[in-house]
View 1 (spheres, helix red, strand yellow):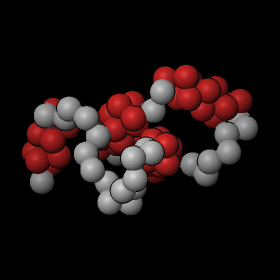
View 2 (view 1 turned 30 degrees about the vertical axis):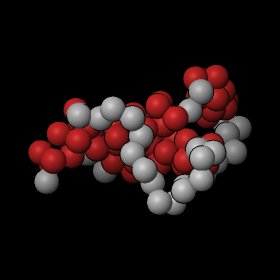
View 3 (view 1 turned 120 degrees about the vertical axis):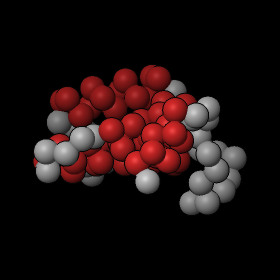
View 4 (view 1 turned 180 degrees about the vertical axis):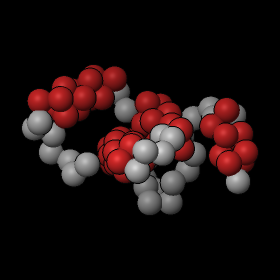
Amino acid sequence: MADTVETKIQNYRTAPFDARFPNTNQTRNCYQNYLDFHRCTKALSAKDQDVAPCDWYQRVYKSLCPTSWVGRWDEQIEGGNFAGKI
């Protein structure tokens, strides 16, 4: 199973279709993958496990989200005033 996930990450080109977000506007998809990445990283780090499986979420949100949004969200997380639950 790990080989298939690693293979998918290596062959990654752009965000795949996600049935939770069927519309053209992918703003929520972007935000959800950003949250999922940080939640995954936090959960696996707390268990002292490898965070490599979280790379998938990061690659998806980086392909969908404008860099200005990501930069602002990162600043908000560092400042402790990010609106999302991580």
